[in-house]
Length: 159
Image (tube, rainbow, N blue to C red; front, top):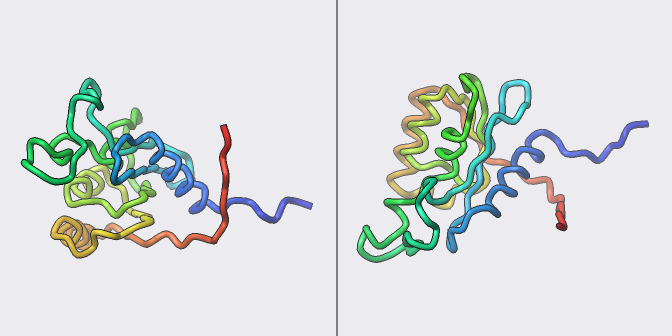
């Protein structure tokens, strides 16, 4: 008889997105993303961080202050990193699992790459202009989005 308690696809891929957050060095908001093909193969993963070649120690991580002294002009978001990390030729009909609803800039890239579904964990910025604009574009482009519904299962990884 087969094992009855195994991870469903949503749990598995959101778990990979969550694990990816642990690579982020952002002290306030760690985000992870996992892009998956129609047949449930992982295409790419990403997390929010500085672009390659830009030292995590030299660029700011602050949230407030002069724009040039905050992280917002420098950090590459998890969703965009996952798209940029992809080495294949196409993402048409793929899904993206992300721990935070994507901003308007990442949404543009998601739509352009042909990703057709977003499964997100948190929507804590739902009232911001960036997320309102993102949802407006997604609705217009016919990209589905839904909030991940956790099953209340804890998975502990020890290294």
